[in-house]
Image (cartoon, rainbow, N blue to C red; front, side, top):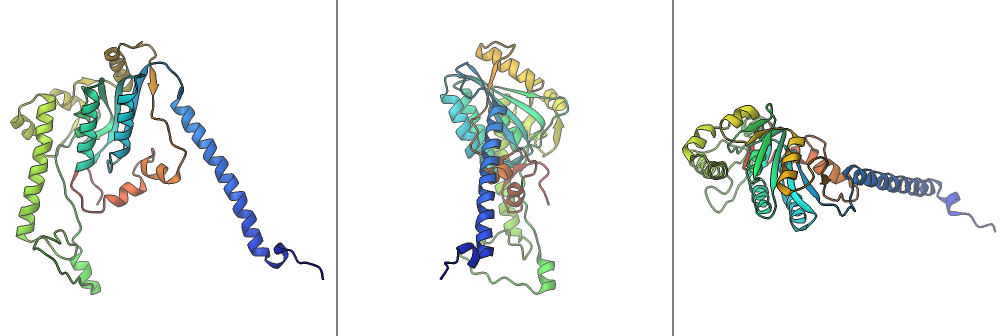
Length: 306
């Protein structure tokens, strides 16, 4: 009796295995190619030449962990003589923005750090910039927005229409503060306002301390309004009008490097990862950031999504 082959008995399954193998080989090739392309874009990964570390802070600040790792690596690398933090961000979570500010400030105590603002460096993005030795902005950069926001949905009318009800058992009156099936009570609103005022005060103190301004003067600017870079310069919120190239020249001067063509050192890219691309890549308004910003969170952030 002639033996039947697996592909004859299970043609669909066999075809699936073949297609899966082709796909994996194709994906491996794409991953390798993109990884090498990213590496070449950042350039000179194995050079021993001294240079300037470049940290990019882009999009909504949800977590500071990756930036902290990169700053730590720059701080401990003897070849990195100065650091530029290039910011294009409307801000984000309070805790993450404060962590980034602290780490930039810590790094500046070891080697010069210059903040270079792109199109937007507002709220938590501006807070992070405060940790740098000098802040460069373009005349039309959107910055400022010194304030705090806590936002959540009140879906009570919608829930009433569809007959949805919550049964809540809680250990204290404020345990389910911000519940979406009812409006805030007076007690809850007063509690949240006190919390926001406290966190707002932290922002004001950081601006006053780092920019050497009177706290009352900062409070007069800290109502959440945005400024152009030119306006921010007039109020003493930034140091200099200049673009990324100007920031490079300044960092090179502070580090004693050749200002004509200093080596720019970017963090070594990890192997290309699709999740990383959507959450940390250049794609503005990344999927994960958009999702996270629909959860209640204290934020130093300008123009939060509805």
